[in-house]
Length: 189
Image 1 (cartoon, rainbow, N blue to C red):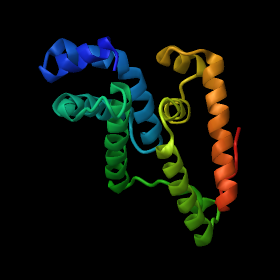
Image 2 (cartoon, rainbow, N blue to C red):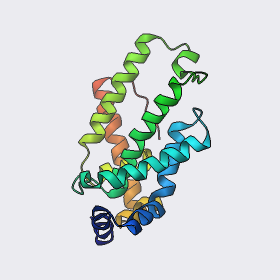
Image 3 (spheres, rainbow, N blue to C red):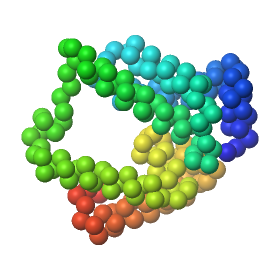
Image 4 (tube, rainbow, N blue to C red):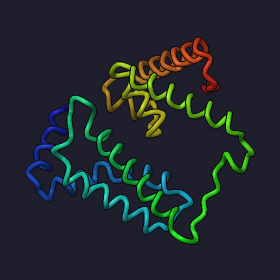
C-alpha cells in the first residue's frame, strides 16, 4: 500500500470527515459506474445514487475490515459496492411491478447449457483467484472495472506494453487451461 493510501486509511479509521470526503472524491466515479451497471434496468437514478451513498457509509463503518495485504483500498471499496448493489438489485426486483427478463429465458437456453455456464463461471473464478500479483490486479482492473491499459499502467507504475503483455499471457494461460479441462468457455480477445 502506498503512503498516500495509508494516510487515507488511517484518517478513515480515525473517522475524520475530510477522509470520507476524499474517499468519495477519489473513488466516487468508479463506485457510481459499477453500481449503475449492476442496477441498470431495475430502478431509478435515485436508487443508484442512494446505493452509492450506502457504499460510502458502509465503507466508513467497516474500514477496520480493510486488509491492505488482500488488495488496494479501491479494490476493497469496489467489492463492497458490488455486493451492496447486488443486494439493492434483489430488493428492487422483488418489488411489485418490477420485472427483469432473464437472458437465458429470452434466448431459450436449456438447463444443460445453464449448468455448463455455471460450471465455466466457477472455473474462471478459480483461475482468477489462482493468479499471482500483479496479474490478478491487472485482470480485475481490466475486465471487472473496465480500466484502460493506460490507467492500469499508471496505477501500477509499469509501462503500457508490460500491461498488454501480462494480459496476453493471462488470456493465453486461461485459454490453455480451459481447453485442457474441456470447459465450455469461448475465448475472447
